[in-house]
Every structure is written in C-alpha cells, then in structure tokens.
Image 1 (cartoon, rainbow, N blue to C red):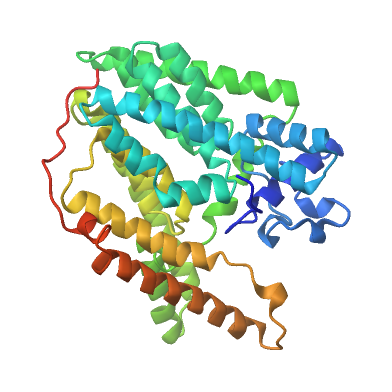
Image 2: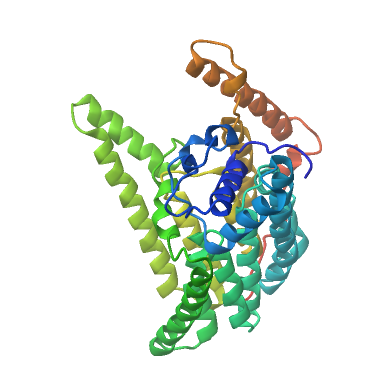
Length: 398
C-alpha cells in the first residue's frame, strides 16, 4: 500500500486524465498530450493521443482525486491506491459468498483469489482500476444470484462505468432474473429489462458529466496491440513473419487473424448465453469471459486476474486445474511483470534497445530460477505442485 507504483505506469495516466477534466478538456476526445508538460507526468506514451477507454464513474474518481490533491502526485497515487483497495475488499467479501453458493470451500476460493501474488501485484502494487471493476462485478453477481437482481444490475453497471468489459455479465444476469424454467419469450423479456435498466443508468451518468458514451471510441486502444504469448497474438506473428518472407503484406493478414480471434470469442460468449444448464450460469459466464481474454491478441497480467475469482468461486479442482493455475500465475509473475520494468532512464548507453532487452532478460532469468526453486526444491511449496486432494464439487447456484 505504501510503495511507489510498481510494474505499471497506468496510475500516472489516471492522474493525467483527471487533470484533463479539471482543466476543462473532454478526455474522450483528447489524449494527455493536450496538457502542458505532459511528457513529464509519467504516463506511458500509448496514452499521449489515445482517448480514454474508461467509463463515467472512473472519470469522476480521476477528476476528484486530481482536484482534491491539486495534482500532487504522491497524494494522488495514495488516493488511487485506496480506490483499488476498496475493490480488493469487495473481492474479499464476495468471493467466499459466491463460492458458498456453488458448494465450493470459501476459504480455499479466497486463498486462490486474494492471497494470489498476481492479484496483489496488479491490484495494489500496480494500482490498476481493474480491482474496482471486478470487485463491483462480483458484488453485483452475488446479489443477482440471491434474488436481489436490481441491486445486482446497478452494481454491475457501476463496474461497466469503470471499465466496459464487464458488460458481458449482463446477459447472464438476465438469465438469472428470468429463472430456471423460463422459455425463450421470458428470457428475451428479461434480457431487455436487464439491458434497458443498465443502459438507463449509464445514460443518466453520461448526462451528468456531459461526455456521453465517448468511451466506446476508446475501446480500440488496448485491443490494437498483440503479444507473443497470447495464442492469437502468436499465430498472428507467425502469419505476418511467413507472409512477409514471401513478399506479402504480413501485418494485414495478421490483423485478419486478430479479428478472427475476436469473432470466435464473441461466438463462444453467444454459445454460453444460449446453451447450457441454468445451474451453471456463473460457470458459463466464466467460460465466456475467459474466451474474451484468451482469444485476444494482447493478454496483460491483470486480464488473468479478472478470471481467477470467477474460476475460484465456481470450482477449481485440486488436480491439474489448480496446478495449471500455479504455473499460469508463475509465468505472468516472471515474464509479464518483469516485462513491465521501466529501467530505460537509468541505462546510460547508445544502444538503449539492447540494454533494455538485457535488463528484462536478467529479471526474467532471476524470476525463473526462483520459481524453479519454489516448484522443485522448497519443502514448503513444492508439495503444492504435486499433492492431490478430494476434487471440488459444484452445486446449483440458483
């Protein structure tokens, strides 16, 4: 809680976006380059011209933080940390409650979620607003599953007003509201009611700040990138490399691959919405949400943290599934976190690119060696990768 921001510079982008609002700019139309002295504000250059992809609620939080601290960076960072901590507290409260609805050990689910180093690193150390987003979404999901659906929709809509990706929760909440034996007319009715209520709340928020639904234009900013360890990103990279070797426009073909991955993800979400057992609605939501993450050309470490609570509350068996979670977390802690090291200001060399690669490589090797020690040698941790227990069962949530 009391360190400088680690492994991400997004919190400086939050400060810049809040300053845009305080100074009268529309952050949906202006990047932080509209600010004087923007280059010294610490935000990643990606946000120099990019419109903000966040919803109205988080814009107000940004504006309040910057206004209340008078753009004092240390105080602003601590206030954003408190916002992230509030999201963490919501996760700590509602993960066990959702796990109990599924007959899953609530203590185990909480341990897999909130004691997870990837969770703590991205939601507290890196000060990501995803903590508030997923905390509100989990709270809304719990209230929807316990017959307080309107409250659930309000909370999920507030989550959408932080980051719009959780809009995928709404069709599943509509199915919960419709009930177990609902026919198609009833399902479509409650989908309409759910979507209408959420849209009305978002529209009301947009009237208050006057910026409308400008965040829709900003959604393309994170999705315009790719990374090699994302399955679709790797396929696109291979296609581009091979095509370029034969004199073709490889990156245009790679964009087709990326678009195909997104379309496949939409298809999987639609399948989970329209097909499956009512008792497994939250698991179906989890699988659809996972498809959106896994089939994206870019997978950030905090995208994985979106999924861990949902899988934990619906059941991660104590066999290959939990071992896979350990290895996934280890990979993202070793590679994705070390890849975020911003050490270039301290590298006094003409060949800055090579020096940065070597610094990241050294960090990754150090992390890999320690991970191998924990997995294969440390007597207190190596058993986590070997010991089996009774499988986790699942019972109806509704």
